[in-house]
Image (cartoon, rainbow, N blue to C red; front, side, top):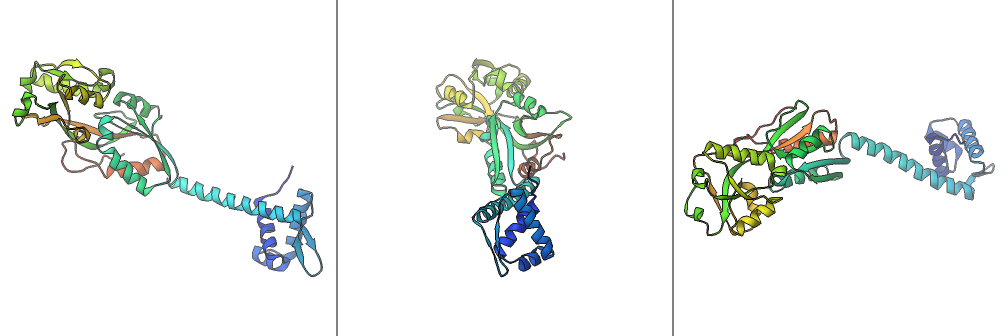
Length: 308
């Protein structure tokens, strides 16, 4: 078993560069006899002669050339280990896993990702499309580092910051009678056919809509329950019904839709950035700092953060 340490490789590399015991010993801040003994120890450990020695000069044997090359490579790798470790401690390298739902990817998330990527370009970002309730579980199990989900989410282990507060609007197909109104009284929609996301995946959003409609005397008559937002707007544009949806994410969807505000109601859906307080990670701290720069008040006005 060999007992060579980095100091042995470093000393030999310095000597191989200087090809002079005196100058190499000076650079290494050691006595020349000590360096000579150290080289002898290396040769005994390796089992081959690494230096040609004469009274006037030294030179590398063929084996010494190989040892010098490999020692130099090893020293560079050792230095790289230190640098990468320091950068990891500073959150400059590594990875982070982000959960998101439809409203986030069509709302604040792209800008937050861009801001983080510009500041920490060497951090790998893994994105997982998860419905809000699945993000609750993933955050508590620490399977994701941070999630973008529909609020509220209250748990002693979870901290949140609101990053979007979007007004809810009524959306119908082009040519629908609601296009004639400047705003929509929800009570006039009591018998309208509604299209919403499937309840097993859209439950928090559906619960919010149900409460708003109940305040106006009815529960929505749901006729279609597609899987995602694309399905919702595809069916709405086909004339199969209307929907209620956050206003800002609508900007990315195709034309052919009529959008009207709800009369007398400033109903909103809040998108939260949420993370587990027990998850100690410098990368996560850096991402949270970027998310906080996008923080909004839940009424959609001003900006605020929520302390961890």
